[in-house]
Length: 635
Image 1 (cartoon, rainbow, N blue to C red):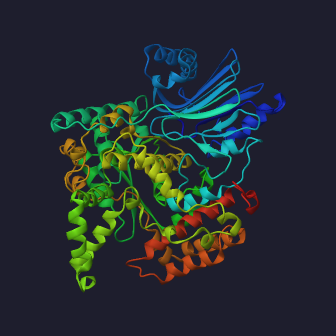
Image 2 (cartoon, rainbow, N blue to C red):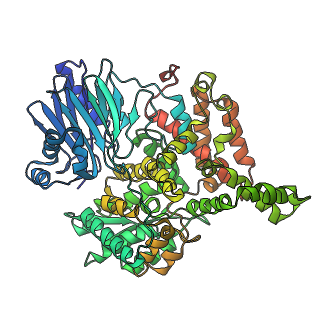
Image 3 (tube, helix red, strand yellow):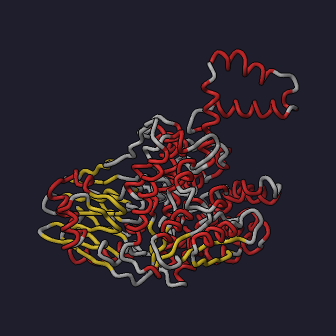
């Protein structure tokens, strides 16, 4: 089983004295964990070193003849000979054998969930890679004079003596915009992160990053929905079985929100067991946020042993410093709080492995935005001459139209439909209304481009190996919403709680299958997840099939207003940020004032998210002992 505290780190091509290799490597390895006392395997050498933290057969280091290879996670070898080596000598030995046989082409022979690294002193080669959907992470930095340092966390790379710790102003802004720092950037200027299905290769003082796989999107009409349904049920069943193989049933649990994904995983797992499965759910004593009844309904339907925890505002106050300290970069997704308490509840009940349903929305079209943007695309199908000469002159030229509800709605629709994708999907961000100079101190502001987040979205959207609107939106969400955000949220909060986590819906075979489901079946009209729900219509309870998407959303806006200690914590954090001199005082004061004056039924949530994100940022800076002086200016 993959360790809840596991990772790989190392370096190649630096002048670290031999006597210092082991202490440096130990410091890097310490940056991989969120809990002390986790065992590590250190393999120092002259001019290179490699370490793995965590236990289990999948997390090991292989050494021999000037070569060190390490694996973390649950790699799946696609060649029988490599599978045999892994079974006999370990996954590190299989990685070394794959490298010796195929060089850079080795990545076609490995699948599953993994982070891998190898250092070859004979050829002066080092590489590191992560799996296809970035369930594992990898950061890296080029070293003076060539070579590189790498690690599963940016904290591990930061611990290497030759890697600067200057904050990147652009990454700081991008964090505020996305609530995460999207790959390939990191919060530090000197470091980068791998994107899904990428490897970084260092040889002869040169370093390059390449993609070894991409989602095979295709559009094949005429496929039989019942045959596709049978196939997806088989794939999900096989994936859940693999995810739990070798783990005692009473040590396995499942996240349960009552939505389609978590309920599907629970239902399939229940079908594989002859005893009730442990299911864990989070509730909120706040109107409009509590979905515990849906979770209870699913638990009853599958005969699960259901465990509940209601998160309180004080729980949030208690959790923020712990969560901020545990992440290697600032992480502003507020649903990390309920995810942590859910994982902690599982640990208290003796669970060692949690199954999470993340990935279903991004593979099988479960977000409302997908249907909404398809509706806007319909406007583009109207002939241009008709739009320009008939539709728009009538809609925008109608006297008194601003007082007619139907006309106002038509104008709003047309104005949005005119915007290209993905720009249209990114409207409404709080920070879009500010220039860098309005937000940041002058030396920070000069290195911030407010167009960069939209540039990131455009690049991912345009680089999708498909021209289909739905495929492009799914691709953006797989890289940013899933890879940079949701997987980091669940993986790290489980690590803090002391449990492992696996994501059955992100199985390689299932992901490739999803890319061949026709978009017309993924979404039918305004029905999201149409195909997936059809496939599991006889498995899931009706309440799950008909509910709207929610998840473990935290009522931040309400609690910031209603619970004084939480508001005090936010005010203290913003005051601390003022003293750091990163932001303009007027910007921070204006945000708090706007939140306090906002209509609680309409706009308070709009201001509460940036307050939350800034609060997290301040606690992260505190916990990582980052002072104002770490930014020295210049890009």
